[in-house]
Image (cartoon, rainbow, N blue to C red; front, side, top):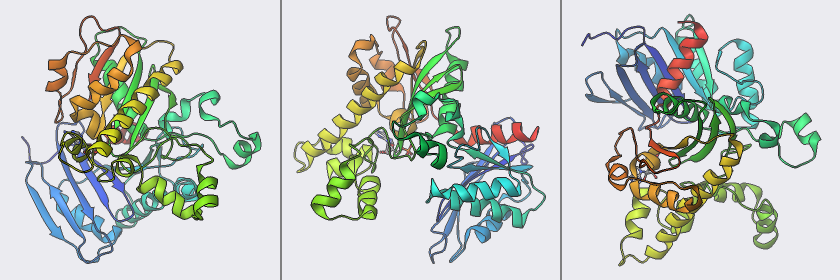
Length: 399
Ligand code: AMP
């Protein structure tokens, strides 16, 4: 293996106090990855994984995004990127595909903070930091929402007064688009069935969403104006009665901010189990009869699976034709039990799973687990958002 990777693209995912990065070779065969965390704090540090898989940890006390990126670039050494692709969470109605960053694009990303207050400002900080260090390096924004811009109005509109859509852009946007794009494309590559292909994609991780994709186009998805709508997640409640806010305010005197915090950070698996947002922990407590929260943990797992199955079944209405279901994300890629329980919820779909194959799929394995009798295909595909971002970045720049 050569020590220098060819024409690499740097993929950057900036959070409010973190930067995840991956330098990916043109042929996607080589990758350097890492993460800067605790930015702005005394314990800020970078964990950097070299080409050979060796990890280095570097303390960068008090570093901000810009100084962390300078250090990341120095850790990359002679592996200089030819372009940078940024994950940007919200692209609003403006961005239906990845775009090269221009002053106008950057100001739109900042303006869209009203729709993604936690994410878009951090994404913009990352773009500006790279710009100030390497003004000549082309940069591309790849939006989580863009893939879902193909949804028809019947799927993306809320049944609220039309002025709210026309003037204030209140609609369903959907998220995890980069993952859904990668997974549906990959499924169509590896199935032996001839197209057209219709997929139900279940991205099940700490954040979870499902999408109906037909011939590479998102036709409906479970997340909405924000990533709170849809499935039950690690700490997010997913669908609740919209009157819950007013009810909690009226009966418990909670402020909107407190309610928002409860529904986003204290609900989901964590809220129902009372012990953890992490599916591995919740599953193991659900299996431990001596644990005081065993029943709560079991209910959390049951609700998670029921809601995922219910959502997948309902999203099938968006597809002219169904080829199969794809499971991904930390939970979908690793838990055979959760996959089996979701399929059990969808009992009217004549899905027939091969238990042995299902049990063998975890830890990054890709493969199908349906039997020859199954009406629809069942796949586990590890998601690869970094690769998708690198691919879209190169396509936008014609590299
Ligand atoms: P992600 O957000 O995609 O990184 O996924 C994180 C979620 O995947 C957490 O809830 C983990 O507990 C869950 N997860 C990872 N491995 C397993 C596993 N072997 N069984 C069940 N859940 C898992």
